[in-house]
Image (cartoon, rainbow, N blue to C red):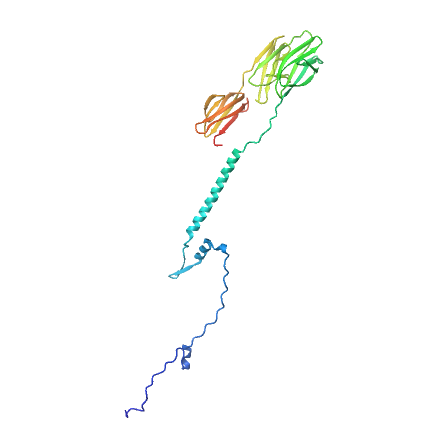
Amino acid sequence: MAGIGASRIFQPERRKPPGQNHDPFLAFDSETAEPEPQPAPAPVPEPPPFLHTNLQELQHQLRTTHPVDGIQRVERPQNLAPITIGLCVGLAGIMTAGVLYFQLGRQQAAARPAPLVKATVETRGTVNVTSNPEGARVLVDGQLQGATPLTLSVPIGSHELELRNGSASRKLPFTIAGGQTMSQVVDLEPGVVQGFVTFKAPANMRVIEAGRTLGTTAGGKIALSPGRHDLELVSAALDFRKPVTVHVTSGQTTTAIIDPPEGLVSINALPWANVSIDGKPVGTTPLGNLKVAVGQHEITWRHPTYGQRRMTVQVSAKSPLRVGMDFRQ
């Protein structure tokens, strides 16, 4: 051991705590800069309780992303099915409620009784009486009413009209309906014996001569002087006008028979029906341009499922009538 230089006693090297280095050139390698303090994030306000719904959860899931191979992928919402089902159920409920409300309104409208309309019943008619010469006394049912020319309001029904002028007198029976206006022209010239005319017509019509109304076809006998008379029968309700020539004999009654004029009727039904007019079958709808006598008729529709419906119609001579029946209403 003498050949060896000064002997040194081996002492183990003390380890310095991590982060401590006495070498000033290596100090930057071991010292770590302290991070700067970051401001505390503002607290997120809690949403109201009523917003905690499936919709809020769906929005949260849609905002959640997961990186996959460097690509941002939006995660598929997990609670979409309950929301979709809820929306569908809600829409179906609204539509069902709307349909039920509409049907209920129609049923109530159909079941609602129609407003009552007070019908006006005419209990009197009007008679216009003229004579040749004028000034004849007028009696109705034996009661003096005045002198011609005279307009009288009489109760409906049958009556006897009597005109007197000196020794000449005439008696005329007549029948009047409620609201009806009729005229009687009586010739009281000495030596002239009047005749009468009556009518058989399918409906009540006015009898006109030279623009003057003499009476109606349903009013009974009409007094006329002997000879030829060119008359005209008019019905505004039937849109009918027809000339008639009669020959009156003194002291006798002439009856004029009026053939019923015809009108056109077209009948239809939904979905379809068998049709009868006044109880007589006429065919299956649709039916067009059926010739029917003018006046009032009853049309009957029959369907094997929907049953039977009836309607009373007025057929005119000039204007075609179109009638329909909807069994679905």
